[in-house]
Length: 334
Ligand code: SF4
Image (tube, rainbow, N blue to C red; front, side, top):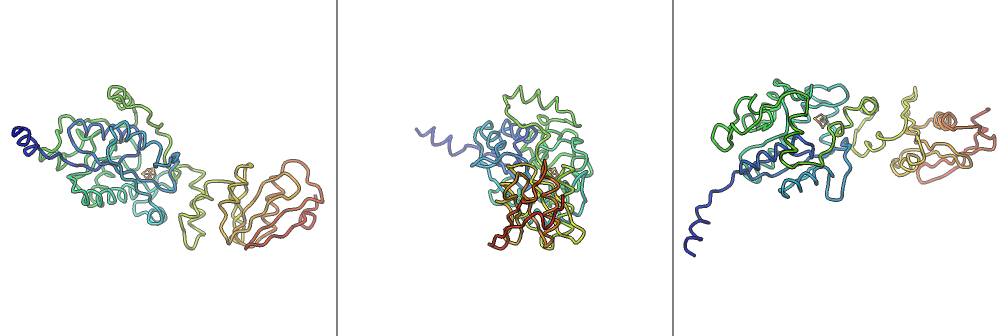
């Protein structure tokens, strides 16, 4: 009995670390390596309006799966909203191939994770970043900028590439065994995939998914939105994800549904100040008009309606809680 009490009193306190966990292969592996070193891992997962993951009730599906596979480690989920949009609008370090401000994005996420580190009194942060894997944010210089500008220089461990990087504080003061960390570099995922097999990690999502800001079509819509919107808000982002978007010469915008599902979504997503126009007695797309140019919106319905349009065709127009009927013969002489 006495012996038991004695051993619990002298039990060494585990080192806590906060890991940025996306649910992808790299961050899951990084967390696994930390757990194997006896570190108490607290995961933090960030979502933004630009995530392409499939949300579950409990959060991002991929991260929920990853956390389960890691033995149900504690998970803090942080939804980034207008503050994130403001960063996307004006990133200090510019964009990648689309509208992806990866360096600023990483700095912001590290800072947020750092707030959590202070709150739970953790010793360091870690990420699944791999040196040379992503062109914008994972080369040596970018990692140094992220470390410096986040305010956590020396306290961000990257277990998958640590052997190729300067030792961090937790390595220098013996909290982490540097000899057990990896030296992976480059875009190939072969090493990570075979390590995942070895460690029983499966069900991770493919690396292509993730962030809409890297998508060239979405980036075009986003660029246009940020140029014309006086007060950008994350509430507007869902509408950017659907439909064909047209900017009229007077600055009005018309969004055309590409299918029936999008027609329904437009109805659900349009804002109180938007006009919604939908075919009343023929089969064609719904459109949302942000502005005043009703003829521009009608023209798009006509243009994207397959097959002939009768002269008796009509459109239902909803705006400001009111409805009226527009007869196409007033606009269209086809
Ligand atoms: S791809 Fe998107 S989520 Fe990932 S770092 Fe870049 S901006 Fe951030």
